Image (cartoon, rainbow, N blue to C red):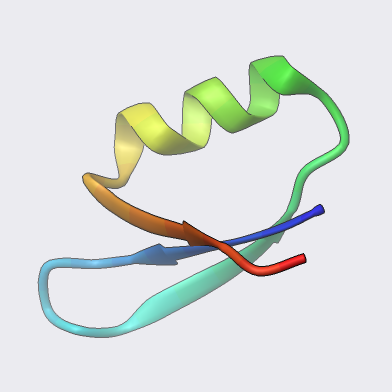
Length: 37
């Protein structure tokens, strides 16, 4: 699945997430994120 992590400056990065542990690590680093697909 793809996660779009939004930085406080308004820029964003797109991550391909394969494991739930990776998802938890990304959401801990980035306060705003949304699920893409």
